[in-house]
Image (cartoon, rainbow, N blue to C red; front, side, top):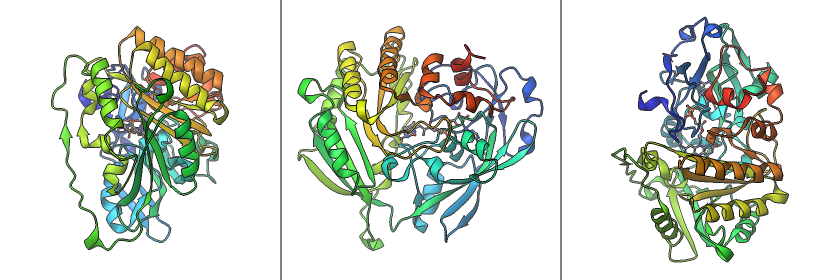
Length: 441
Ligand SMILES: Cc1cc2nc3c(=O)[nH]c(=O)nc-3n(C[C@H](O)[C@H](O)[C@H](O)COP(=O)(O)OP(=O)(O)OC[C@H]3O[C@@H](n4cnc5c(N)ncnc54)[C@H](O)[C@@H]3O)c2cc1C
């Protein structure tokens, strides 16, 4: 298995046959006869197995990466699905346009952004990526090419947004960019003391700030439980180009693939504490480039290697507003009790809008994301316990980050899964899909 065809968490391991898709004709015509069928592959930035098809075929569209059309009046871009968000940023920000929604990495494809209906720091204002998609060109395993939009093949459109690659191959998509006057953000970072403070800051900020998110110190205990750095920001207003702040993009690399995880109790405590106290003042304002504002982790190539060859799990859940605070506290206390720390957590309150896809993850409430080195059964048992908390609270776990949720949890978290199932292309499958539907298929 080459390094490209794995998930970002490097768990589970999988082996594939690879078919490059540059033109629709490259799609093999006998997919329904293939064991495990085929699955589109974007750039492997999903943490778990929704981008894997162990023992089956992966359809790699990295060469389907052309920008096809741009309407400078409406801001609607049409491009092939293998285009990276990083390329769109490079080309479009100097022309005054920015993605309406961006996740915490720019190294994902447009196909991957649609298929996981990704969200970003501005969910409370602008919803998820799928909310800005107008049309999709979808290739089905029988060779049909369908246009899906809110007016055409509407149900298939709703299934394909957040459809984890199972409804067919997205050839191209049309979606909105938003106008900007420069690539900079006015950002304020506030050190806060605990979970209650986070919710207070979040509700105070959502009205005036387009982007909000907190980094948690997962080592905080007692009255410090959930303490962290709250970040809020807006696109910077017009600044003459000569006065733009300096931006030197420095790319680092994790050069080795260590034979064991470099994350242990000591490194976790040190890192979390240092991060929490990284600014001296309680509140700090800065005008920063979009790379620092959205993509700090992209500055270190292969950072996932620090977890060693067994890989790691990212756990991201959403808890409804009513039970959010208690559920988040329970999970954070569970981390403390287990002695299995997380290398920083992320906390954000989603907006109220209904997500566009049948299997979309964002829903009203607060979302918490945590990383755990893979310590086998010990870690799996802990995450299973978190699933119980999330289930009882009426929340959900994010498919893009998952490598282990049980079939029954999946059905609880995604009650529309059976409706979705009727849109799954008979020639397509994935490791994730077989894992969560095996009891019922
Ligand atoms: C550092 C980091 C930060 C992240 N931050 C966020 C965040 O803030 N918010 C968030 O929502 N996510 C976040 N993610 C997750 C990431 O955005 C998603 O997992 C995204 O889907 C990855 O896209 P990809 O192009 O790498 O696709 P892959 O991971 O390769 O595939 C993802 C899914 O898309 C399907 N797919 C890919 N291409 C096509 C196609 N052409 N047609 C049909 N289906 C296709 C695949 O089959 C698979 O099911 C983050 C990931 C990382 C590594």
